[in-house]
Length: 587
Image (cartoon, rainbow, N blue to C red):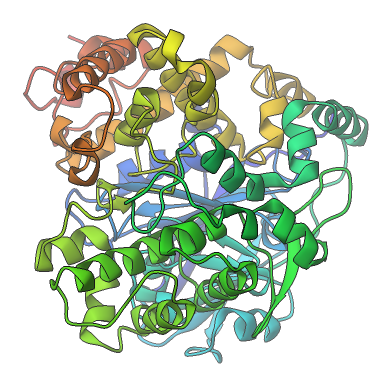
C-alpha cells in the first residue's frame, strides 16, 4: 500500500500570472476520482454558460487520476476543456513521457487548471508540486523543435494550435503522442501557452500488482492484438468487414488497404516505439524525420484520401504530428475539399490519391494561409455551412467521424450519435462485435452494449488508465484503488462512471445541445442499411436506459440517484423543460 494521496490542484491564471494551490473537495475526489470526472466537475462548476472556447474564461485542465504512475501500461493524462470545434465538453488523452513526468512533478496534486490569456506567449513549468511561468522562446516553431528546446517532458502546441485550428492537438515526444481530438491545442494556443514542461519521476510502488496485471493483459486477446500490431490492425479489420470509409465516405472498402495496413507498417518499421511488457507502436521513417503512425493515420489519410502507399501515408501523418493537428479531422477536411472541388463548390484542383496535394492543403489549414485552408481550419461542419456539401463527410456535434463506417451497424451509429464529445469511436466500439454477430442483436442488446462501454470508459478515463490495458481491470480498478487506500467496489465504480457521463450531459445541455444533436449526419442518412426510424427507437431506448427523458435530458430522479441533485445549476435544462434551483432540487 502507498500513502501517496493526490488531493490538490494548481490553478494558473495566465491573465494575471498568478499560480495558486487549492484542495480538491473530498466529495469531488470520491464522486469523480480524477481525469475525465474531476475535469468535468471543475468545468461545470467554473465555466460560465456560453463562454467562448478560445476566450479567457475557458478552463483548460491537465488532470491525472489517483492511480497515475502506478497502473500497468502507458501512463496518460486527460486534457479537459470546452471544445472550439464543437462547443461541447471535450476530454482528450495522451501517453508518452509527459504524463509520467507530470505525475512526479505534481506531487500531491491531481492536475493543473489553466484560465486566462497571456499577453505574450509563455511556458508553464511544473516541478516539486509547484508551477512557474516564463516567456516562450519557441512560439512559431513546430512540435518537434519545441519539445527539443526544453529540459524536461513537454506538452506543447505547434503552428496549428497557435493559429486556432479547431482540431489542433496538444503534442508530446516530438509529435509521437497527442491529446488529439476536438481542439484542446487551439484552446492552449489561444491562451498564449506554448508549452507545459514537467520535471519529475513517477511515484514508486505497487510493482507486484503491476507485473501481475501486465501478465494478465499480455495473455488476453487485446494484449495479443496490441503486441501484434495495435491500432494499425484497425484498417485491416474495417476493410475486411466492409466498414472502411474510403475516398471521402464514397466506398466501404479500399482496394489498396494491404499497402497501408499492419503488414506494410511492419515492413517499414525501424523498431517498436516501446518494447517492454506492453509493446508500443511502430516507428517508421518519413521525409521529415521519424513518425509513429496509429490506426487513424492509414484509415483517414490513406483510405479516406484514396492513397495506397504506406510511405506517403506515414509522411502525411508526420506532417500532421509536427504541425500539431488531429489526423482524423485533417484527413476528413482534405477529403471534404476534394469532393467539394469535384462538384464545383470550391475552386481548387484536388483529387483522391494525390499525397502532394493533400500535404499542401494540410499545411495551408495549419497556418490558415489560404481562404480554403482558413475555412477548413474550423472543421468540416463549418466549411459545409459556408459552401454546402454537408452530405460529403459525416460529423456529429461538428466533430468528424473516424473511418469506421456505421452504415450497416446500428449500434455503432448509436455510439457515434450519443458520444459526449462528438463523433468518437473510443467511447464505445460495438462494431468490433456487431460486424460479426450484430444480426442476432435486438434493440436492447445494442443499447446495453453502448451504455455499458460508455460508462466503463468514463470510469477508466477518470482513473486515466491506458486505453487498452484498462480493459484488463475487470473490477474497474477496485483492487488498485484499495492498494492506495481508497475503498470502492465495482458497483460503486460503475455508478461513478454513470455519474460522470450524466454530468457531462448536463454540461452539454447547458450549452444548448438537445436530442437534435444526437443525430445521424446528413452524409449517412441515405447510406444506412437500417431504417432511420429504427435509429430513433434506439435513441429512445438509450435515453430510457440512461434515466433521461425523451428529449435526452436527465430527470430529477436520476440526478438524485447519482448524487447530482445538488450539483446541477439553475441554467441547466432538465427533462421537465424547466431550470432547477439547487436549493429545491431534492423537493
